[in-house]
Image (cartoon, rainbow over the protein chains, first blue to last red):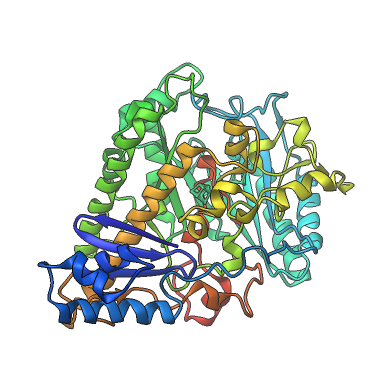
Length: 460
Length: 56
Ligand code: SF4
Ligand code: SF4
């Protein structure tokens, strides 16, 4: 299976199963179109008048060589053979430090941070128990992760400090490394807190949506006032403390700012270098939820963003858009790519009351509660369902060209739209595919720039 | 490298099966609220450990 697309006159062919990306000229493109019938007489007839027979022979043998090497029209050799590992480990925990929030963002999935329960903070004791749980359940894995989440986790900064100190001490005992991340709305980021996070190498994900209007429409204080000014001040100071790649800005775009490339530009102009903007997940009746007719517009915005990034690339400015970051040579192995979402398998969320859920999106939904810190997983069958949700078990993913880059979508999202973790939300899929095309295009352009310096390839 | 086709990446996914799958790389989540970690944009921890250190 191959996926072919043209982006601004650049012809790109992705060989899905080998993950190989080819930049092709018009003739090779036409020949690949004819596969599997590559008989010379057919190709001559098809390309008559456009190219000489000699050129056709040449391009055809290049195509045939790649097929022979398993880099074009290659087979999916794990299909039907793959089984998830029996020995289950937990290597990442999302700690809900605070089921409470100092903001009232309109699109919040978590009931203004309270997850449909009473407002509460996670005690340091619970946090420490979670650390022990992670260190003992992670088997031989050396690198494990703790993500501080909420509500607003910095409402419980005291708890965070104690948990980090304990985590570092215990990790050394187990000869493991814990990578800490905190996802914050930035409102409580004082200089003291920023210094603490920096000194402890805690990665920060900072929420801001972009232009003041877009941000203040959705990200508001409980009295309805916008948060842009206060948040920008704090996160700018925070980022000035950060070393390279210690943070990511993340924003959400909605139906009210479909032109989100302008929000990206706004944040980049402010000097931020690591930026992610995410499409809102919302039930269709919300005024800010995307409707199917919005998708072509969003696709164009992604393309616009790719051109913007290309421009930065050419000016040697290091500004990154999270979804266009793709590592063609150092990316994850094939096994890893079979399951994009780790929820319920190696990744669990811990609520302040110590109960365990497949991930933060499920917290508070009793039907998805997997157990608790004391007893561990008490519903192994439920966990098994999540472990079985790899791409070959999802009909549309098994046939999708993007499968080894996407990994099968967000389980929580899939449940919200189709009531099943096995069938992805088509809206998500369309945006995912467009982002991938943009990411591949940027990779190709970058490669071509270096390659053409040698003057070896003029086409494509 | 051909005259009509340039192959951009040297590794093929099939080559990443033997000796890999160690599970040491970052856990992925694709939700909007955590800044989605799509699998494609992650890095392999084994390969990373072999490289000279750069960035995070
Ligand atoms: S884009 Fe959709 S169908 Fe394709 S792999 Fe991802 S979730 Fe599955
Ligand atoms: S279900 Fe969705 S939100 Fe939860 S871990 Fe998976 S991708 Fe992330």
